[in-house]
Length: 328
Image 1 (spheres, rainbow, N blue to C red):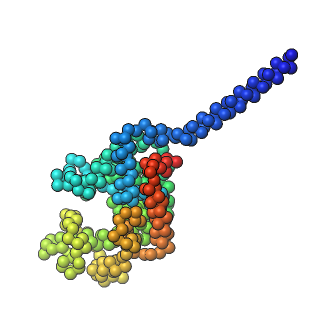
Image 2 (image 1 turned 30 degrees about the vertical axis):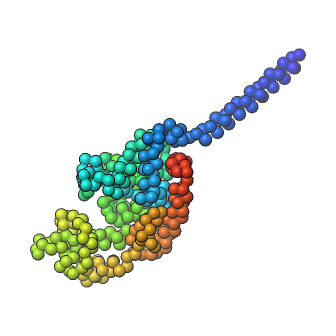
Image 3 (image 1 turned 180 degrees about the vertical axis):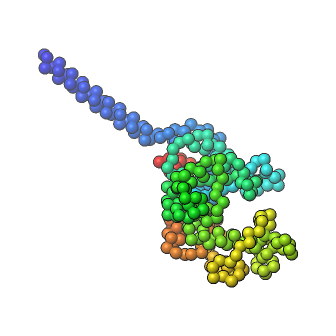
């Protein structure tokens, strides 16, 4: 009798143990099937899901956010028109519509998803308008892993410009903070946008020369490009360079004149796009000055992610799949 009681007791323990194990497995499975981001998504109303999906589609179709999301591009930046400065004639135009889509979608993201941890994507909207273009505030997407990788590869250059104490994590935290604006240095900005260090250095030089050539002199009050008989570097588009004090740039090593250096930069420059008229699902456009091994690899990585982006945009559950990539 005592043996039977002991047998039943241990049999019950065994059954309860199996039950507990099954219950635990189901609990773990439930957490895997319904992660926090998915629960948040399912709690949204249609009025919230629609602008959030438009936010992501806009960044992937009309910007370069998809390449940041998949990891071939460290970061990308978009401008959003400051509501208080929006002019009546801008309403309904492409840039205004884009700004509305980005701003409304970002509000949903900030309210529901910004507090969820992601190792794949950081999104930030700056609190203040850019000091050079006061009608705009910046939206920035950052892929933390790629961002820190390109800084580590070019750390000496970043330290030379920003100070020897700069680290990849420190700069990531700085740019992710809405209180801090984007970097102004062309070379560093180009590296963080995924153009490669060599191409970014050349492009910085070209832009500095263009600012110099477009600036007005005290006399004879003409843009320098006109006096030097050089084609208008901005093709008639007013950039406000004449409001900036003249930089007085001297020619680089081996160039006798600034005009010759400028012309050489134009001659060696090419585009990353094979077909410049292709606007949808194209790789990021940037100027190539040195088609070296690193540039070739950058283009290859972009092409791989372009195919991934096409596949994602074709999904019926695009919003869900995008959030899954971000948070898983």
